[in-house]
Image (cartoon, rainbow, N blue to C red; front, top):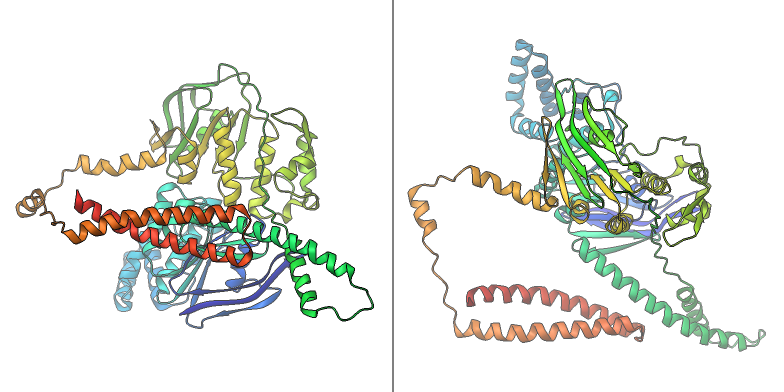
Length: 625
């Protein structure tokens, strides 16, 4: 069943086109991740598909039976209404019954609650109410009578997410869920719950996210919006990166071939007398087509991070018997720790556990209730906060950077001007004179990162650095942090990012307890998942225990399976050799276009065959042992 068909979509802002001639379909059951650089038009495309923003050209057809649900980065609310009124905005008897029941529960009025229970019985709303309660509980949404305009940014995102998930459940039959960075401002437990929740829901999904583990769990296809064109890749994020590299390599080979042809044909065109009209019309047309390809450029601009780090002395930072609490909520209770040079520490814990307070105290932004925090004389903090840039939105990008410094010293010597440094961060000259208010959310975060590195820090404190950054920028940031010789302290819900960067974790367990865990997030989760099995011995009926202890009879391997196993080994070897040969040919750039296309198609076939035959080889291998 077709959900959405888009044909020749166009959108521009001023003279800058975001995309042109985009044509695609979204069908029932599709799970698509949309990937692009910040400022490429991802959020704009989502809003066009949701009917909130019109395209400049082209058409969008939405099946009349499909309910489109959009979760935006900056959700829109009835600001003076309560959380409850915003979540249950639909005027439907079942939702209205649940809304009155939730309000009656909060009111403490017994008569009102009795009436609400009777209405819930009459409308058959209890199953849906259980679903609502699970969502509200997992997203830690309380005090439903609180006004939305009094909520923090993170609370607003969670309320918007709850509203979206409840909407999915209510419109179960044919829902297209469009989500723009749904994991921002969620702690890790919430992210893991959300990915499992969406994964088991029967919805069609179009998703923008920077969380690669989340992407791999809930999506089966990756769409890339690059230079105004849409490319589709089946599979996970890693497969997309491999296929993209192959595409760029193939395009480069095609352009090289076209340039060689163009030089020859250009000479022929110039030799023809102007007055003569007997030129081959088809050859002229072919010349202009080749010219288009020959003049095409593959611009794979990459963010570059070069840093001359301030020298760090022997003493970094020392915390002795540090206590901190807000009212009854204990953040730190006698915390002791001495930071060493080059440490990479991740901080995890539920929202409200005090992670941001901890990094603020370390930097002297907040004072502890008691205890000592001693910072080395040579330490220069670089703080990347959740709040982002606090500056005048009517300031130009170049003015913002020049207010920090006119030039930037490089690690290998020499300096860069503010304008040159901006170009390294993918702000071209024409964009440097744009107002900050015109930048996308991700571009503002990139500008914030630039501002931090411009000060040459040697101790980076990163509070949710992955929010709103595009995946290509994140990859470069990860590599930069891996090479960074100073100290790094990271608060992040991005599990992939944490697994790559940190050496150990500070786990905020609540009530002032901070555990130093020796390993990354994946190791921590593995340990946590084994804990219940160790602490709670499983009680089984006698019959089941006996059956579990009896070894399963081993299937006998016949001649046919042995022969198949031997043949598979040979086939796998041959397929791998053929794949390597084709890859070398593609890399050489010597193939003409038909051969190039044929080789690319054959590599796809070989990859599919290898997956199928390797799975069968593993099955037979287990039987042979």
